[in-house]
Length: 242
Length: 242
DNA sequence: ATCTAAAATTAGTCGAAGCTAAAATAATAA
DNA sequence: TTATTATTTTAGCTTCGACTAATTTTAGAT
Ligand SMILES: [Mn+2]
Ligand SMILES: [Mn+2]
Ligand SMILES: [Mn+2]
Ligand SMILES: [Mn+2]
Image (cartoon, rainbow over all chains, first blue to last red):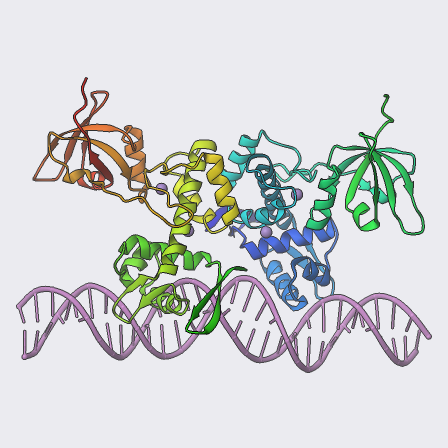
């Protein structure tokens, strides 16, 4: 299905290139490269682990993505998204996060269930669906995990949060987002009310094992091992008066 | 992804068969066979035309569906759904019709846009999604075109409607459903308020060209050529007192 | 500078799902 | 009954996106 035609008109040469909607596989690779690399370059192994496919499959796909002008890639050098690749990736990220929001807020999904369903739906919905859904949801800026939702044009709010484990003991912080990778992690965090927006006081960051102890607004204390604390991203907050 | 395991335990033999979710292609073939055949048998050409694929592709898929115990099929004899095939088809039909309802009632889709989007989404949503959506929608019995929505168990309301062209002149009829095949048809019917639930008086069914003339509740008169009148299904209604 | 281990690539294979062209079968009309 | 046409099947190819096993390259440690 041809989505649009981009005519690249350089020095009189007019070869108009057909841009077709990326397949689910191609889309997931683009997202994985984006997640693994930010602006930089993603290694074969990184992507293989993220997508649970063999490294050989990734090498193969990197070459195909290069053919499609979605990445720059030289053997043994990893892949980085082109402008086109990045915009395709962010289009999927936008869909994913809007869908998660809908599932949680309107269909009664649990916090940890939404990711898997969105991972499939993001490839099936149209741009028209996506924008109508955004309208229906009231154009939210963040998804349930706190991740910012890219605009239709691919702009993404800057993220200046940092892992809870790197906070200063004695600081007040607010949870900005939580990693949506592991359902076990989400399960635990959600069960203890450690969700985006929550205000915390950092009591201790123990050097030996990295366990972080925080107190929440209700006076409840939580001790988080480093696998948990690495999944919670916070921003400093002025000490609340109360 | 394995959805469930069915253990067929006949005469001590216990070979448990894995039933995996049908691919989008397999699912669309099952639906096409169901639509083309009702209870009977679907021909290669029927299905090829419905799905816009070559007859050779259909022959190939018929053989594969037989391997999977989804159809009964003998060469040159056409294919008919097994119990298993029928239940898979109806599961997709349920999803399709619920999704159409959601798109129309909550996302502001037009009557004629919903079909295409639902045709893709039906393969991406889970059973869990489907039932939560049904709950969200208030468990509707019919989709926007008037088609009955199968239950999760695969029960389907009997349809005793008939094409408008076969009605008796002078009869009162109520629109039960409209065919969702052609967007042009839907466009016209919707634009004239000829939607499921609408009460009509049949003024004339002209023998020469099959044009049907009806008057609606607002006293408006509509003349429908046979391609339109074949897309409208009605049931007789007692003459309204007014 | 050399050795070793990790990472990446190549080569070859597979299944799903499509296609075209040619051959076979069934259905219809003369 | 035979000839013609429509339908269906077969054979052979193609693309996508996986895989394993073998090889090559890079990076890290001695
Ligand atoms: Mn995905
Ligand atoms: Mn998320
Ligand atoms: Mn479909
Ligand atoms: Mn419908």
